[in-house]
Length: 387
Image (tube, rainbow, N blue to C red; front, side, top):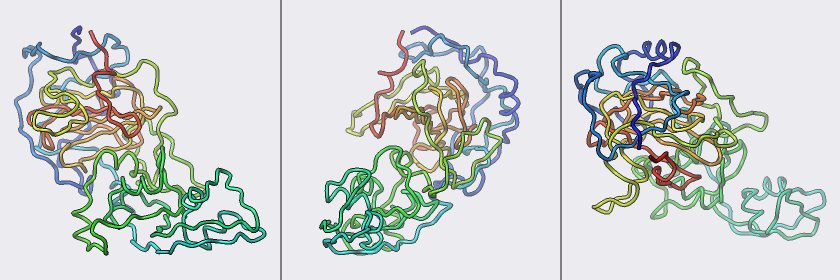
């Protein structure tokens, strides 16, 4: 691969923005996990030698790069993930009451004037569950005298602003199980007044609050499929914001672009590839790659997109940014020491979105980088430029 410098001169507006980031502890309530500690290294010199073996390189398209050299960031690291002030994640801001209603298996005789929505209201089951049980296709036409199978189970009625993550936590059930039982599909945005079926908790019975907390651990798939708040019938998704100066409220729904922009993906940093995609030597699976870089190296968006998550709610990954690119593609950037974007912000290919660190369960200053197509992790090296 050809070498390319990561120390291109930043544009004046971004430099002014980054210079305004205070080097202080992250705001209270930002994320759900304790901030991760890291070392406070000496400033990196421009003439510091770089390692050349097994190093990912950027492609030569530098016209849209927005690099900010680490020495241009004023102040010293505080030892915690630093982030722009932001509201709590939607799954913390909107609590959920575990008030699902349990109904038995039954049949329903369709009356004159009935619609499937009316059957849903009378039976307490979800529209999608009834449609699947009776092989109904949209627009779900039913006729008088028809007998419909009503599948029994626990059904939760979604309120505006509730997220799949918060619903799963309220019942002590993994969100991925709720996705599977309800056959939810992309973009995984719930609707207010929608009913969803809640599978039984592991071991049966009603788990206590502490058992629910222990049973639920947030992961990337949860954020991608259960992180957006439910839309009201008259509510439209929020438009992407242009700069991190504007902050979207927690109940704003952020949607991905319609398609992946031309040009594909680029390497988010220039460093040494220290862990590859797939199973490791001890049997653990890595859903991305890890690239060793100096502390506070600028991390760049791999493609145009909209920021879906910023925070440190997944303890293993520390400072974390997730970007949706359209066409089902998502990129993930972990172990960051500073987070420079906001949820709902539109970002360009090569734009600086964070600074590297060793937060979370990092072995060294490094970047954890993932690409996903839908819910499936993809080996990033198969999508990134080669020499």
